[in-house]
Length: 316
Image (cartoon, rainbow, N blue to C red; front, top):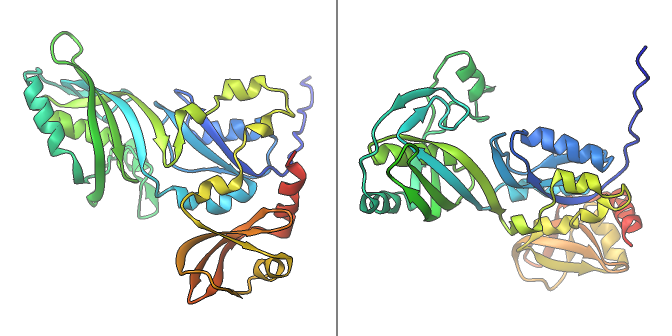
């Protein structure tokens, strides 16, 4: 007879965990593991990483989930290895080999091709992606052996640096550092670079080393989190307002803070601003976001009084 499963007692947790996602785990599985380790009630991630990708995955807990959408627009930085001369069905190492070609390009041609992919480019999203068409993920069509038409998307490659290169031998490759805008598919970039070199290619490694202001040096691994005492784990969280970098800050006194949290506009001598982080004064705590127009502070996403109280109680 099996022993009864112990029910995990969930608790309110608020903040951002910068996780170094491991190889082989989906973003959602990594999120669920972190959520279980923190015994958290509510969590979501910003920016999916494929199971074959590792690196920076910000996970938002509790009140931070209200602002996670803001971070989806952040630029990303990756390090990746493109195996030249071999194309696969998924443009990465998970897929089946569909074509092999000799690699005959020179280093000069590699540099010239990489220059071509700098700046604004257009990409056709891969079939093996979570992008939806008619309410269905593209990878679901791909699993059924179906290819559907995809609209090209405009993205920007801010930096494309050649870190290492091998054009001879059994496994020729390029190792690249890519800083890019949101929505860039690195698998597609690697495949397109291979095509431009005349030999094809696919990704064999991908690591996100930065997303917005968050870098890999700030991250904790699942193993590191698990090794901590349960009371220590919440201390790995960054405060909710790390998601609001670049927002102007406005601080309200107690009376105006209460009215603002009720959804009421406040008047003041603030300059116009599209993105504002609003704080209460005593004690200083995040209330939510807003924008200022013609001297009016107009509420956006607000924390609830219960969330604010839980955040204050969790602070040392």
